[in-house]
Image (tube, rainbow, N blue to C red; front, side):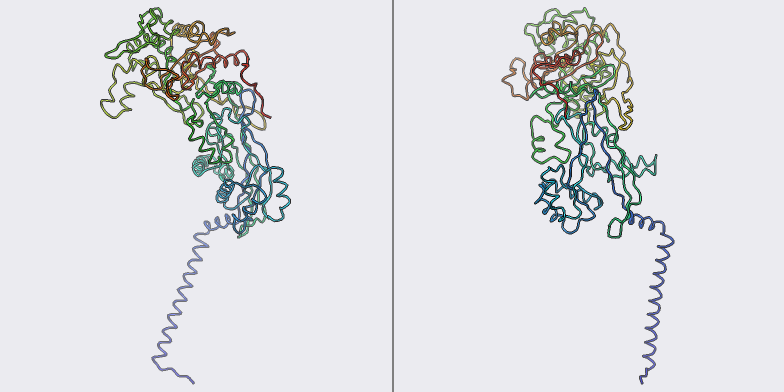
Length: 635
């Protein structure tokens, strides 16, 4: 029989008490935690539990079509076979699975990268394409080995296609896989939409949006074109296995976008440019419809849809031709002599000249210690306003710029859109430079640079100096003149079309504002520009035309070279003068205006005006030049 001494018994009982209190305290903590979870935090964890039980699987929406003004589809979707992997059934090493599949179907490193990125973004839910556009042979080989790859299947998917490849690539743009930046932007859109519709689950379901517009109209009209993704609410096990579908909501296809562009005119002009670089914009002045929006050289947007390969990307970025550069939208050029009709109109409106007032041109103009030379050796003699435009007399405009001053010129040119954002429905438009004393103060840092010198005003009269505008701005200004001062915002989209009902909602903007101009002054300028195409600098290009048109040639200096030493052929290509031209037709009631530049080509009358003539022949009379391959609809 064991007996305890008094000290041992007291020690044992003390340990029992401590253990009892410890156990009691632990039970108290458990009960407290249980109360906290079941009562205080019930709602929070009930939602989390429900979310763990239910997964939402996206169903991408079919993208809307891009259609030109005559019903020609220039951006469409097509169905092709893809090799898909069910993310929920991926077990083990993903790279090992892909290696095994690559023995049967060609899988590029880019395919592998895109799949892994999509797998992470999907949180391993739904099916993810590994390889797109399988050939018949690849499809047959996989089907013969399908039993080896549970969870891998061939499915038909919708892909974006630009059937005319490079044609109009800068205005159409392209789509690409959603990036983190795209997600952040769309999330901001979602937060805004929730304020109007808190229950809009479809509209806020980001995983259903796999591709978005990156540039061009695909980007500007992204929310219209992409539609609304659908979804399936699926009950899943703790291991992520689907058990049953609880509810479904079908996707809503995107709406079709109807362009103002005549894609045949676009094609013709791009062909006429050949290997030259440049920009060309045609506008319907009464509506602001952009009929052609050409940037040369261009690129193939189909290369970007599934992710462009590194070799092609490097070629496009490193090319001195800059094929990715949107020249009508972002390129800024000195307008050269195409500025002169606007200078002449400004002189009439500000009473600095009358149509019959003359100057004598000896072939140069001296101002201070500098001699400004005319392009015609010996000068043009006695020159009135019409002759100054028809023969493009520089000396007349040197003197006019001096008399008007830089701020008067800027104040007159601003309402026409020079140096201003036009508001066209493309992102990234350049503002250009409309110089003034205020502009110079705000642009330069040093006090001596901020001062405007009178000598700097002289070259502004012939469209040189600090003048730098986009071809879009020049076309917009020409449209405003042809439309007698009524300003319409240029736009590339005419209407939005419902894909089911084919009902169209017009997007054509209303009149923006009016420039207060005297009709008789407008007539003086228009008549002078008509004479340019009859007997002036562009007469050769427009000889025999079946319609009356107005125009103005321009040759803009790219680099500061002494005009006496300048020889076009002996000058490095990228330092040669630009060839410019602007036109409107028919003269009595213009339905089209054109502004264009052929980079580093030389004289506007020789290189730009002939392209404009052929474009007007087609648009007004339906004539197609023999040297250009006939237009063919894509199959």
